[in-house]
Image (tube, rainbow, N blue to C red; front, side, top):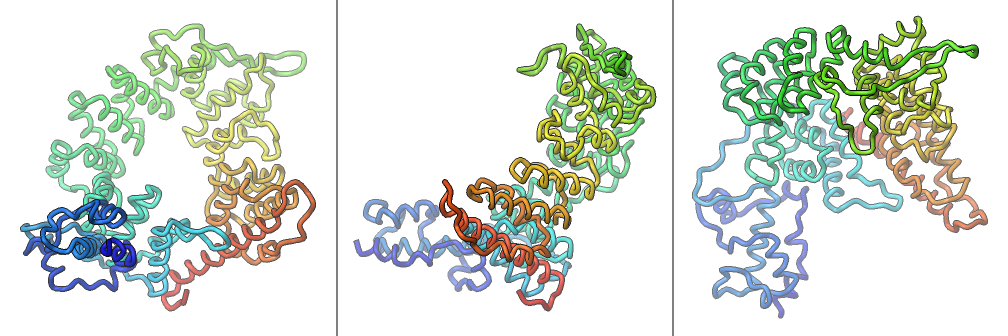
Length: 567
């Protein structure tokens, strides 16, 4: 079994290294194979089959078509060719024309230090990352891509396969990778089915996909294009000519499938205006319930639309300010039926599982009614004053939740601020998800201030969603509040992995300028007596990793900002 041992002793020959393409030079035979001028000199064996043969032995798992050759030599030759293919990012074809040359990319090349850093980040991603005190480099890749794209750099050709592999594995990287990879990345993706996601993204308008500017080209693409291409076309038209986009949609609306009508209708959010009302009113009679519901939602977002006025009258009948000796009390009465008019306006008779019928009808009315209604209904009170009024029969949470969804849908800052309440309020009546959605409506500085107050009052334990809604890098007050809260959690005992989500966010979102503030926290203090031995060492390690990550992030930006910087 000497051939089995030979494969096992040379693992580096077949390991995929995304940074190795720069130093891999194919020989004449390899170039012939890749060009398609001759068939492969080794069996056409899948990579998984080669791995199985290496692990089990060529006697138990023979190499197909090895013939009279030494099995070990055939295995190594096949592995060498497959390794070259994987490094090149190209699946070879036999007896077919060479692909057209890659298009030019006129953007500036990466500075040398930044290019080396990118290769390191990609290699760490392929290796699966590490913990301990070392930063997890792969988690810094999204920020690196954002910064590189902001500078307008182009991706190094030899790192395109590693970038596309990273984007294939992580959908959150795709927009950044495709922008950075540019036209050469999309060209390369067309040669490998593993990267077909890049072509789909281009078809939907990502990464600079072109849309015809001439009327004939627009109509031809609308009539003959794939669904993703048609959606991208409609969205692009709505951005620059909302009326033209609507006319295009009207031209084929009756012939579209229900699921396609739903997606096309959603594209009308772009450039939504009064001119769309007549069409949306027609769609309220669509044969698809989902399409009718979406049309109702869009009409509700149009100020002054006939539907929003109808919803306002219905909602006003359900929410009544009632004067009592103790002051004004809000009385809520849900509808007793869902009549034909309500159904035509998009309110479904049957509620989702777990919701009562009348409660469901009420919430849909309140979400669809214009928020300006309530100032008039309550005698000119502000949103803060209305929200502060007591609600009879324990229906405050239900009422405020519906108002909150209406505020988020319309991006209403005043109502979102009022319903969000103070960061010091222990029980706001809203879920963390609902409060996070309202937070996202506020300006970035106000959002950070609110979360900083909440973290200072209650610690970081339940603040993960709130922190994720804040702009990166975190403001100095928010960053200081998070670091202080982590230090307090350390003193309180327990292990840092109970706050691993917040620690991970801190590594990615803290301002690198705070790295100096963390130095004192990296030293393990004397271990306190208690039920959690070893916590000081774990916390020291976590803070060392956090400080190291911040220093590394500072270096990443320095390398991109200054072409002459050293990493």
